Image 1 (cartoon, one colour):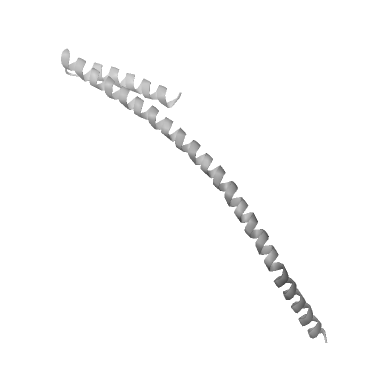
Image 2 (cartoon, rainbow, N blue to C red):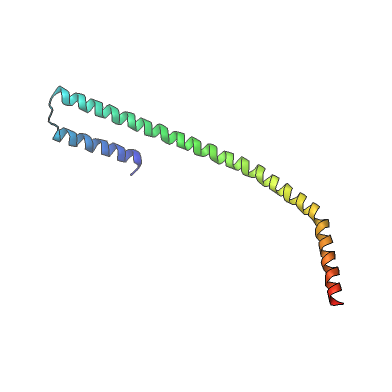
Length: 107
């Protein structure tokens, strides 16, 4: 059962209970029922509007994440390539120093 159906069934059951247990009669009861049904209808409309807004916000967030992820991954990839290029000579120097130290320790 969907939320809308549950809301409708709950509203109908609540109305039936109110009719059976109400101490008022005639026009007052009719006014109370009319107010209740109007409130129920308004609440149902608000729920539907909120669901549409949630769906729209979810789609916007998904699109934004897709766009941001592609841009961010490109930037990260570029930064990693730059780091590798710049670090390669330094790593080579460190390896040479380690080799020299190892050779000096063996002597």
